[in-house]
Image (cartoon, rainbow, N blue to C red):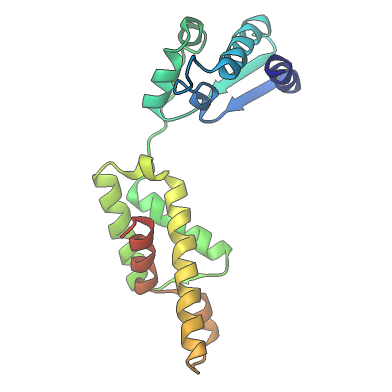
Length: 188
């Protein structure tokens, strides 16, 4: 039923755009004998991309290396999907802004040292060209979420010891929270 399901998906996108993120996941070269379902989906997409080219835009998205491998799996893919748009990774400053924005939307904030730590972490992962492998903007979100969780754990431990927390404590992410989050995300 792969072709039927793929055609249904394309039908719903007619007159618009069909966006397929991580398009290379359509084929899995690791299967013994090949990926019959993925191949069928790709064949159906290729046919529909040609037959409905006046009524449909198909965008295949993903990381460059994986997309190159994917496009090489079928001669029709590279010729039909020959327009490439490279989106640069976020800069360290943009990643910090994303983390701060997410914190603000959640009613949280980073203290001054935590902000400096964010800048350092993002500068390092960008300088080492690790940011794409970490998920780019998703890494900023993961770091904020993990730091907020570390703050909550820290405050819960403080409360279980008889301490109390102010309203500011409940919404402020500290340097220690960020550093612990970085260690956890990096597997240290």
